[in-house]
Image 1 (spheres, rainbow, N blue to C red):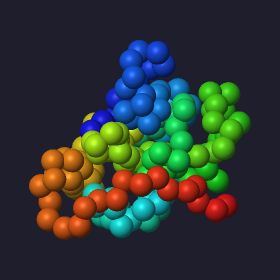
Image 2: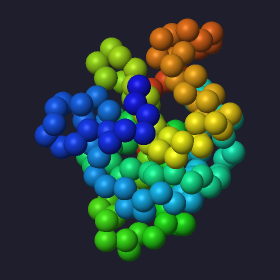
Image 3: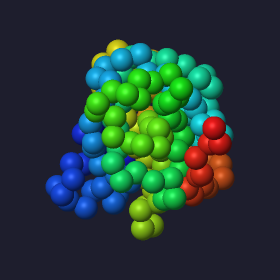
Image 4: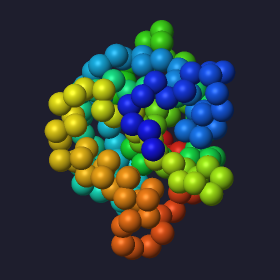
Length: 154
C-alpha cells in the first residue's frame, strides 16, 4: 500500500511494476484539485462525494495504464490547466487513487495526503483504514475485484 509518496522514480527499482507506474512530476503543485470518484463501489472510496475539490499535491504518473489498474479516483481533466508545461500525459487521464494486482498480492495506491490537514478528514481516514483492512483481508464481505478498468467515455 502506498500513500502520497514520490511513487517510484524511473530506473530506481522494479517498484513501478508494483505500483503501476512511476513519478513524473506534480504539474500543478499543491492546488484545489478537482476530483471525481470513478468507482464508488470499491471499499474505502464510497464515503467521498462523487465529485469534490481537495487542496493537495497530485502526482502525474508515467507508464500508468488502465489495462493493469482499477482506477478508483481521478482528476477531472475538464477543470485542469492541461497547457501547463509540466503536463506530460497526452491522454488527460490523471488517476489519483487506484488498486491493482501484483502477482498474488493486492496493491492500493493514492496520491492524496501531501497536505497534512487532509489526514484529519474522516473520508481520508476511512479510505486508508479500509485499504489496510482489505490488503490484510480483515474486512467481512466479498473479495475485492482489482481488475483493470477502461477509461471513462468523454
